[in-house]
Image (cartoon, rainbow, N blue to C red; front, top):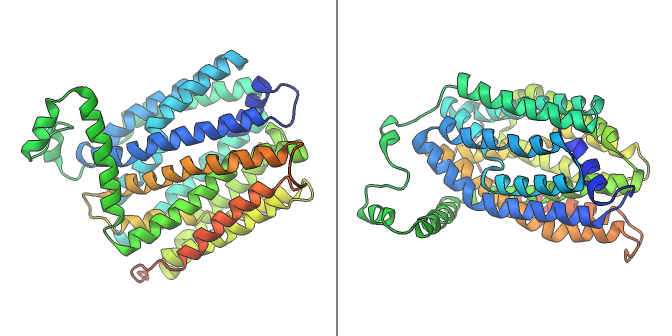
Length: 410
């Protein structure tokens, strides 16, 4: 709901009355990099903890804390309040960004057999796309103030609903009595007696060690990790650059952003809820992954060379196929993990995605700011978007090499 509005709010707070603002682009890039750095450590750790203590237990805190940033902007969107929002958004997102979708995937994997997981992950993504459509439609007809107020209310309802109605998914109930830092080995017990800073360092190092050991445990996982990295490198770059590019090039505002996202959301929802359940058992995750990434490349290249304001709308239609990519990656990874490791598996692949979110703004934010400014080396405002497309092209090439088990025909 807030995505179509946040660009206008950021520009109004930092560069009022302007269509191009390098400061806004750099701040958005810095936020992406910091969030990626934090989630690189936290996602594998949260995934591991959810394997022990249940998905609902670990999801509770992020569901509650994510209410705070939108609550700040629902009160005021002045420059001072924007910076307060910005700080809270970074701090909360560093620890919990992406944790709810990640743990939701692990929750689904707990309750769905392997042969149906690609379909189940597609349906879960489709429901997320449907929510995205509802949110962007709401933003289309609400003022900026109302958008953040309604968003905060919805976040509160979501947290309450989860606490009241969601039944936890716990594989081994005996683990529930185990303290977070304890283990059967004596060395782990000694760590509890060390200073708090040492315990936090140990947790971070253990999280990174889990990430490394898990992703090198099989060739399929290593290949999926490379695909996930370059795919998310491109997605993060597009997310951080596209709206500023469209605002500078075609003077888009909140309403046009919402229209664009509704088109992408509706086509993506239909695809994930209708096409993917039909195609996944027949083609398998690997082929669907390559199809999704191929059309993702076309989608980005079209944005980069947009010669008229209708071209981004046409490009958004390609979401009917490129939305296959992320559910397929998650399904491939899920099948490489045992029933007690689904949280760890999804957390580790989310950690790889976080690395991409660190690298993407370091590369693409300066490039976007440069080519949208008057000091561009040559007149090509969409040059950074084209470079993002090449990152997606690398992901597509790697996906052709991913080998998984044959598809299970229904």
